[in-house]
Structure formats: structure tokens, C-alpha cells
Image 1 (cartoon, rainbow, N blue to C red):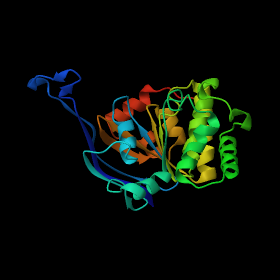
Image 2 (image 1 turned 120 degrees about the vertical axis):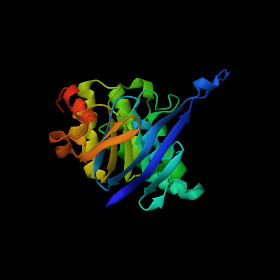
Image 3 (image 1 turned 90 degrees about the vertical axis):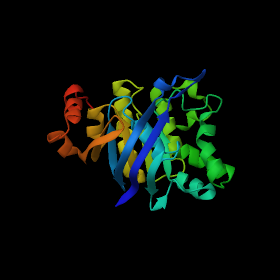
Length: 266
């Protein structure tokens, strides 16, 4: 059963205006970052979204979560229309739809201690006593393999991999059903990235999560994903189960991705 349904989703950016005023008419440019994309994401699966930088992957992920507004199209989450939801409706939806950002260095507020980073969504969305909230925060940290000694420290005191674990814990705070993982290992070295991939896999089983896993690395996507969607210049050029797309790729672009990226040990 599909938990996310995307239909004819389009996002056009208009670059006719420069920061210094209007450009000449012949330099008017519109770019379709996402071009008429339709897909379903099934409950409990990992849909891998793979493509080169600039193909529209991250834009698509943000459109699904309505972090940016689309030019056209529809998004339904668990039967609810994400793009028409307002106020309390949208707030309720966002409890169940979270994101793990690419950059563990920039996604955490450096002014907040770890306990404040993890407590913030709980303060906004849930009415918990301070004692219960502290217990929940400690549980979140434990779920991602970190101990309570981290709670009083600041993000800059941790390695990139540890910061990404904190970001994952923050995404889990409201017990979401669906997470967009936007290039979560691309800023990490291979061995640390492999640990994060394995963590995401174990958390999916423990919390019954559904992922949209965005990456430019075909080997990582193949390892983690139930199905793979290949994106090129704003369009989905191929979507199939992982085994099928690996053994019998149809598009030339998919074939080039499979041929160009070396295997990694995970």
C-alpha cells in the first residue's frame, strides 16, 4: 500500500532576475528542477532515488515534504492532501514526515546543546513533563548508538558521523512514519558512511519506517533500497525493484550509473 503518492509534480525556478536587477530578455531562463514526476512510495519500503548532482533529487524530496512549494502537481501522504493542508492540518502531517539532511555540520544549531536539539520538536508538538521529555531525549540518543554523556555537549564537539547520528535522532523524535534521507552519507568518509547506512537499516526495522533515500551513489542505494528510481534532468527515467534494475537496466543513463560507480563494502 502506498503511504506517499506523487502525481505530476513539477517545480520551475525562474532565473530571469539577478540580484542586481533584471537581466536582458534574451537571458531569461526557466529551469524545471522537477519535471512532471509521478511515483508511489510503499509503506515500510526504502525507495532509493539516485542521480547525479543537479538532477532534481533533493528538490523532489523537499517538495514531497512541502518544505518548498511546487509549481504544479499533487502529493498525498497517508491519504491526506499535503499541498492543500493548512495550519493545524499541516502541522499534524509534519509530525509523521521528517527529513535527515545531507550536511551534519550545518543542520544542527551550534548554539544548542544536544539535549536542546532533540527536545525542540517535543516541546513544539507534544505536551510532556520535563522529566518525561528528558527520558525521551535520552532514549533517542541511545537509539542511534550514543550515550547520555552527549546531552550537555554542543554539536561542534562531535565528529561528522556523530553529528549525523544526532540529526537522525532528531528526525525520530516525533516517531514519524516517513523520512526523507537526503544524501545522509555523502559528507562522510566511506567507513563512517557505512555505519550510518547500517544504522538507518536497523532503525527502519525497529521503528517501522518508510524511507525515501536520496543519493548519487548507486552501490549505497542498491544495498539499502527495496526499489530504485533513477532521476535525470528533473525526470524519473526508470523505476523498478532493486534486483530488476541492477540486472536489467533499461535506460542508458541507468546503465552508465551502474558502470561508473565502484562497489563499496557496507
